[in-house]
Structure formats: C-alpha cells, structure tokens
Amino acid sequence: MDHCLHFTLAGYKNSMQLAALANRPVFSRSEPPVLCLHGWQDNAASFIPLANALTGVAMLAPDFPGHGHSPYRSSDAHYYFFDWVEDIVALCQQQGWQHLTIIGHSMGGMVATALAAAFPELVARLVLIDSLGFVIAEASASEQLRQGIISRLKAPPKRKPYYPDLVAAAKARLVQSDFGLPEALLLAKRGTVADQHGISWRNDYRLRLKSVHRPTLPQARELCQAVKVPVLAVLATDGPFINKLTETQSWYQQLTVKQITGGHHCHMTAADDVARLIKAWL
Image (cartoon, rainbow, N blue to C red; front, side, top):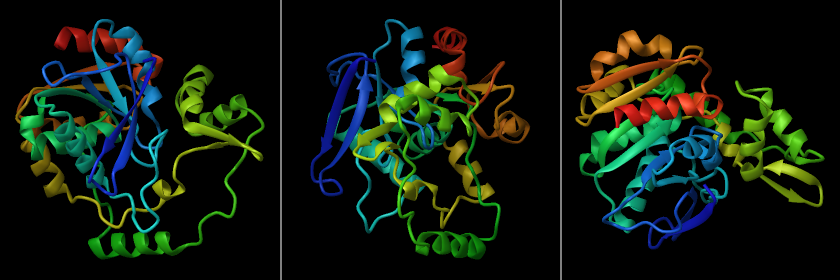
C-alpha cells in the first residue's frame, strides 16, 4: 500500500479529513475499493501485510480520526464508537460508493458490522478478522456513565512519552501486543511523529478514556441480526474473540467461521494464511 491519500469530507464536522493508505492511486464509483478498517489504537499500516498477500485486490485503508495520520476530533468532542460508523458513511456518500466488500479487524470489524446493519446499501460482503459481535456494557448504564465522565474530567498527561528513535517506540508498542518487531515497526512508521523532544505516538490520548456508553447485550445482538450480507469471520485461536463464538455465531444470518493459529493481529503475523482464507471465501 504505497499510495497515501486524503479525503476531505467537505461540510462534515468542519470539513474533516481522513488519511488513508491504498494500493491504487485513485478509485471510481464503478470500481470501488475493498475498504479495510483497522482496530483501536492501530492505524492503516496494519493492513500492509494483508494487502501484499491479497495481490490483485484494490484496497483502501483509512485511519480513523485520532489514529495514524487522520486529525484528532475537536477539543470539545469525544470518541464515541458510533461516530466512527458515521465517518465511514460520510466517506462512502462523498465518493458515491455502495455495495462494498469491507474487511474489519477488531474494532474495525465492529464498525463494519454496525455499518452493514444500519446502512445495508453500502455493504455487500463483510470480513471480520478476529472480531465478532461488539464490546458490550459490563457495568450498569449509570456506572458506565459515571466512570466515563470521571475519566474525561481527569487532567490530561502533561507530556507524552518520547522515545529516542523509531525502534524504541516500536518496542514500547510490543509491551501490549501479540506480534513481533517487524509488525510494530509498520505501525510505528505511520503512527509516530518526531519533534525537538524525540519521537512520540500520534494517537489522541483521549482514545484511552473510558466510554460513557456501550451497547447492551440485546442491542449488540439486534445489530448483528440486522446484518443480511454474507459474513466471513477469521478468528485467531489465541485471540480474545474465539471464546465469544458459541454465544454470538447464531446472531448472524449468513456466517462462515474459519479459525487460524495465532494471536489477535493474525492479519499481520499470518497474512498469507488469512489472505488464502479470504480469497477462497470471496
């Protein structure tokens, strides 16, 4: 994915921009790309290994707002999960895209699922990479609201962590990851910025704040049940979603499940294997 694209969503949230990586310089209404939606705290570069393995497939991976090269939301805004769905709807409407094949990893898979449920005209097929269902509310609505607001009202960090070089930043990412240094470097090259203090991660710190609202179990089930298009779920044996399979697989009308050995970022660490499963299913 050697093309860096920017989409200005004119008239939408103060003409917000979405940055993206693509393996084509342009896309048309008649030949839209496969849209690739990354996970929380990742960026578009997480799809580089898969794009290299899915040869011949036109792919576009945007950075969600607050991630990668896309700008932060405004200072008076917050990061609501369903706002990311709205961002993708706005992008599709601006570009005139419909009936897309969407590949979503983790949070990106949840965004894609909600998109397919609420805007079926935009989605033709759905590939979920170590993603199934939604992250649901574990506390009561009142406690979720309380903890979310307390999280928002805390003073922001006075200074972001800085690293002497890109490798050091990538190694810091490894502490909370299930992949190796090559994959961490891919994310770091797109997800960091250098200034007079050193190298720091670009992602908005507000992404780490607790959510004031999460869907309940019935709401999550209803969203999945509303997805009428074919769905392929590629679940990692060591990932966090495999244990949700028994509960959630009956929620989908057309679900194919494939398991792959590895961890949550299997589309990076086992890209060839994941690509073979996707090609066969498509």
